[in-house]
Image (cartoon, rainbow, N blue to C red):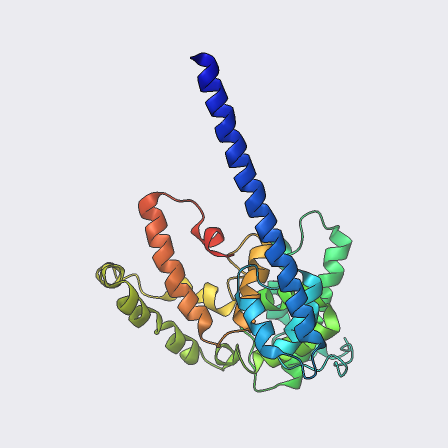
Length: 280
């Protein structure tokens, strides 16, 4: 009897093991196919933007930073052969937002890879200040906000200083434009979309939040940093940036609604870290 049970147990383990290997094989196959499709889209004339959008949105996103360096500029229609020159440091201290940018960047240590040497991080922080102030100086209609640096550092770490300037400038005049007004009125207006979305999708949660007078301010840092300020894993930040760059500018607030619903369900089920569970 014992031998029979032991034999059954081993058989089950073998089946489970084979199933796991099979799933891994299928995932690897899908990844390889996706890589082929992305490279074909990039090499098409003209570039197949629709396929790149689909790749960025679908499971796994753009897969690697090497691919992101090629695809992100395409998603934002940035010409990589006509990048801005490296900014001069001479006038940066004269900018009205210099001191605030300096303080925010100095507080951004956790956004850099763990184990990075202090001197390397300091060089990147200086670059980040240059990127931010260069974009602001060339676009006086844009106004700095706290949290902007969380977005800038993501692009900087993936594509480098010069391309980051070009991508961030385009992004600031499009996806982030409402956050960069002189006042927060436009940002508050976008936050106000959250409750109607929840009312449509989860009336019970919406009713609870109204009774509890929760408001929407909890989602502010999510929205204006594209969740870069609240996610501890850089790979999750990158996955979301793939998604948002290929989506409508309001997608970040729709994502906030979905995240709130998932968080509510996770609390009921005592599931830890629902954000990371959702980002795939």
